[in-house]
Image (cartoon, rainbow, N blue to C red; front, side):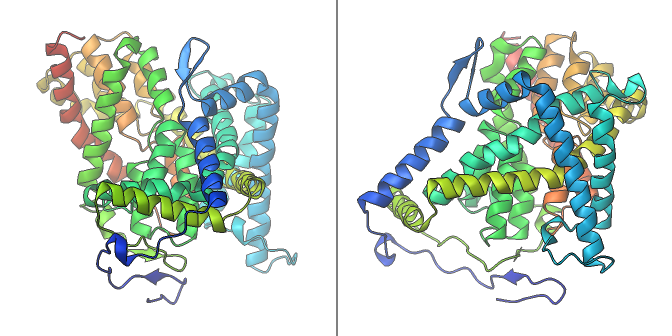
Length: 476
């Protein structure tokens, strides 16, 4: 191992050779740990994966719980969101004063320390939260497409999603689910995406739950030495995906719900293709493979599918045997989720509100999109004047291009439906959340903008080809 002087980091100097099943000390398959893992796995799978009918749609229990809380108790959720944002700004300020020896409280608030930029953003969020909750200031700040959307939809959703999701994902992770899924996913994750198999769980949490939950898992594993900085950068920029449920919302908004399976399949292909390419080029390929905790990389393994399953069960049972109780895992997940929410929600509000206001009230994205009009025309897509700025404006909020494309020709709507959910990096939520959560990687603003541009360059011709194929098949 090696360390740096400024902040303690570790690096793995070499990768050991792969082991066969008979070279590994497998855990004993005892009844108690097996049952513990099985119940934890079932709880996580049911909550995040099992489709159920709800109000005329098919969704998952996680989405139902979040929807019930945000729609039934909007005032309570708003008050909670305001309180936790203000608390995050205040605690960050106190932590920064303590670290600068301006005040001394004798309490460990190191978890709330931040860079000067994110300290300012959290404080700005704390100032804005009461303004948004009480609808103070000019009306244009609170329209449904600007502050109303940012506060009543995104802030409410993220504020509830993280602590609720953290309860169930912590039970799943701490009692063997991470080891089981991660071991089975190794043959895919490493060759294609240069990631350990355990990263499949982060991606799965994003697909079926929320990118917020996926990033929570990533931070949790990173802090324990399960990921290095490059792996965190890959996961947060390539696999913090829009959930399946939200893809359905996009399809419905564009009057294409009947094409949901095709849109989702195209979206899945786009995410995979972008990840395969981008993990092999800068800026991702230049991020160091350093750990912020004692490294705990996966043991290289080679075997048949049956041996992989046996190894995965062994790893899961071993983790369940040493892991916490269900109550301990649930409580720790809830507390960690609340702390994380207090850290990032103010940043999301400050940056996200600026992004949607810039999109709504300035011609910035029309100007930036103008050079793309001939490109869209060349690709044979209709409504080029609408589609071109929509390919750029997604960096502010992924739902804005969808709203722009309403009323366009079917080919244009299909193109935007797939593009908007596939660009992944947007600054109403994912961008500031990633930069704030992983400031020790570090994830820089310029890198996220560059990756958004690179994804767009890859996606525009790819999705254009898909659009022509779907149209040729007579689906549009």
